[in-house]
Image (cartoon, rainbow, N blue to C red; front, side, top):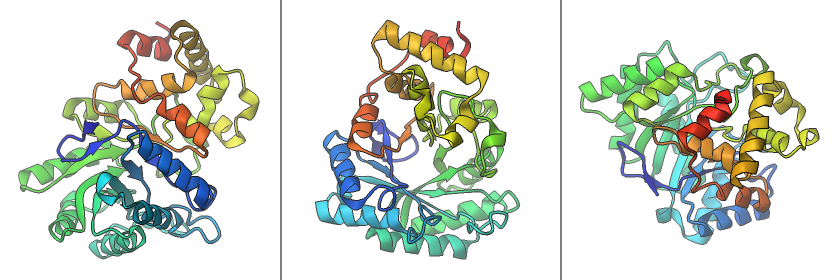
Length: 320
């Protein structure tokens, strides 16, 4: 288990993403994945108020299924539950939702769906750069004082805003963000091919901020939707068109080749290398995995103890 700095939360090296549970992943399959993750020692779940809202009948499905599973298995105290709120309405992505009333409404809805008395790690799913960080931090700390949430994180925030928010919190004796979610994996995605322009991709400035402060990173799309594992295994035909558009670039093709070579040299699987790359960063990093089946779950779990050397990371990134 790893302690998230600035908190009392001890988490498994891999966080289980649940966006598709209760919709694309049927209930019985989802319960099986959750059971197997727990049996392997996993204790960190990631969901969001908005998950599956884009699917017919999907609103609240992920949080509701987690609440049902926690109640059925009586495992609430054993798990660190993270959920996200303050996402824009899907039909108005240019209109931020970051007022205290909007956050309060999202928290209340999430608590009802999860059937929990509190949320262990509450993430702001997006930022509103026009809103002062002082107001945001004050609002979140008010919900901490009420006992609704324990610790706070940010998702898709820029480094400068995270710094300003945590500086304000420190200067006023308040709790700041203990973790940050961003799109990050072993590849270099094409920003122009990503439909949602509010998504923040790990860049040098953000990486430097994490390295300098020790802020925990909890990256999503940590396996690049299977692009590198499939490329390294010679199974490019199984890559979905959307994933291909984002990652099928010369630099990533070269990285996939080096992953295959490193796999042959070390005996590590491509999945172990892809996740091990993130697990070996110079600051606490807990990748979010999103298995659709038990086979995919066990493949990802096999990477939990993998750590790459600086030389291996350099070889993957630059061929050196």
